[in-house]
Length: 151
Image 1: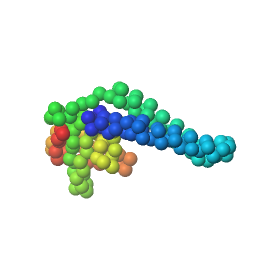
Image 2 (image 1 turned 45 degrees about the vertical axis):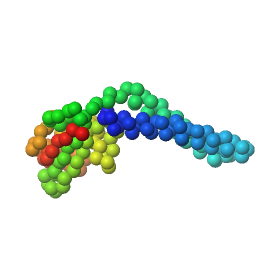
Image 3 (image 1 turned 180 degrees about the vertical axis):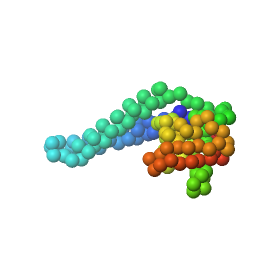
Image 4 (image 1 turned 90 degrees about the vertical axis):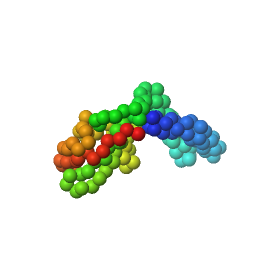
């Protein structure tokens, strides 16, 4: 996992523990005061939210305890984990930039590409100027690697 990904997950964990968890506990206590719990929608909604928060806290604690943080600024050369890669689609001439990151921090909308994705797997080991053929759900795509950076 990258340092930025680790930090983001750690911040989410801290927020869940210090803000979200106490807020849902207060909501449950407030809903209990309204009487009959069997027909109390506020109570059931708060308990459901509490269950989600506790599950997410356990998930994040597990991820962070097993995380292997890689300092990508010390890497160079061919594409590998942590690389920020600029590609051009050879069919549409559209340029895209992605950083290859761990599964837990991947977010394609923000340009964070899961290392296990078909595109990332095809890119691993390539150099600037190389062409890459990728099989996607929409069919075969061809990309050219324009640049590789390690931030």
